[in-house]
Length: 278
Length: 189
Image 1 (tube, one colour):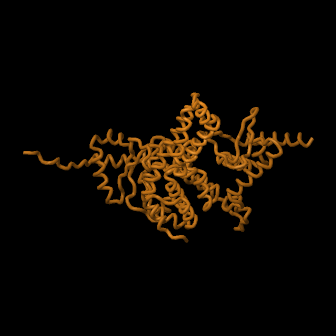
Image 2: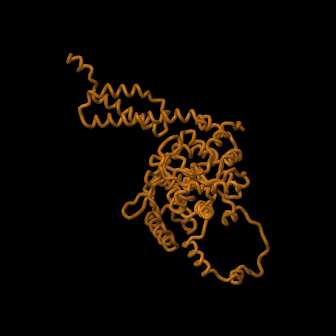
Image 3: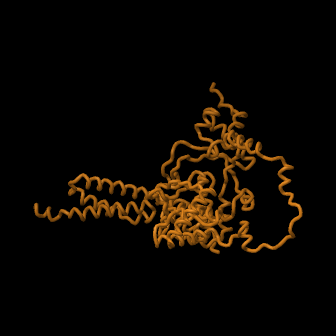
């Protein structure tokens, strides 16, 4: 009899692996990766029941309790899905996705507006906004002085603007913001393949405006998880991510770039470049 | 003899005060919380809001209550007892009016896509998936920027595991049943 029991006793490692599998499946279901009905709860409970008498260590009992807790959450999700499917809000996600892709932007906007009841609210004057307004009014020059600035006198006859000029004054961009970010991300990946990329070196350019533009774009890359900033020996390094990876607990890192800071960076960059060529 | 049923009272000044509380924004969020209304209007605040609702009805507005929790309140999940009252448009506006209010057609369409997608996933969907479906129409970077903007405006909330859920503003402003029915009835173009 004792021998029979011994034979029936499962291998502890296999039992643990089975329970961990149940926990992982439950977690994936909770993260909306799978349909809650994918898990056969009865089978999972039977598995837990089968292994329960053989657990001897506290950790195993904790794992068993954890799995039971996760299973109960999956059961709750199954219940809410049944309620949801019986409600008028139910739509098959795959079918809806196809429909959302096929419908035009205007049609979608019309549909949304048809079900939209925006909140009615009025902004009102508050003490801080009044103070801000008074400060602005106090430094504002009289109208005649302001108009004097626009008296240009005789000027050159009107001419034509090319794409370059339009790009310069910000009317029409040569490349979209999306393209510019993708280009910068590729450049960062290329530079990091040859060595460590210093933040200052990467964003600093001969032109101040270009430097600020690069800093803004890098901040977008970092915020959207395409690159990360790491501090090392007082310097900040930029590391590209192979694919988008969002930070769980993002931290704000303000970088102030004035003309003085930029000229220092530029000098340093020049020195680094000349030492590298030597 | 039994006393006659309570005569209907009209709270003139208090109705005005309730309108001020609901329509003028004082803090980060619009509207007023139930405890705030009780403190300023008294225990009869629900009756006062009813009277205000009757008046607002003439100008196509209505008073609505929303759960003020940061979590999911749809589909029978957690709901805090604290509620927020807001005044919303009773009817709907045209696309042209929406544009005049400062909304772009792209943003409205993106909001429709994101809300419908999250609803189809039972009120919670991974941020990445929402961005992916938006990116098909608006490009990757704009999809990310729009998701951020909607979250900041209070349409979506995001939990620690990166799941987006419908937040207070969607609950207050969007009639999900009408939206889902419209999408279900829409023909492929």
